[in-house]
Image (cartoon, rainbow, N blue to C red; front, side):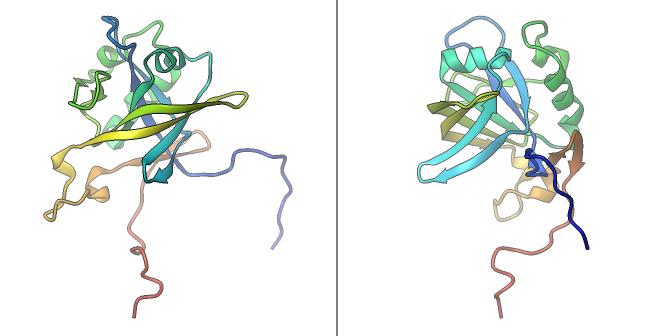
Length: 188
């Protein structure tokens, strides 16, 4: 068995692909959606996540001004809209309208979520790290909405029913079968 040496690169794959909705606070202009594969959990108390956005993206401007955004998880039904929102600019298109997506305004914040998304994470920026090609927004999750179609009989989120997708090297992937549960390797 051999190994090849490659130059340094982001090879942490697969990763979740998310659609981040954002809007200028109090503004009457349209909300926007940016597709990102650079998002992740960073803390459980307080509950926090991070997203990384290129400064030249239209959504960067909106997040900078509002200090908030919504991370919308993507399932198989949203894959085409997810891709479209990643290759078109919100400066030129109303991404909600173009993709027949519905704005959902929760009690958590003014920025709308994507109603068709199975899970929406409402985030307030607490810190911005200017890192080079991307700025990383570290944000506290202030609320979550979950589509009740994806809850099992015990009220838990059913990942298999939601049919979330992942992203790897320019390809969208359906998540596979369950392989085990936390701690299964040491259960007797």
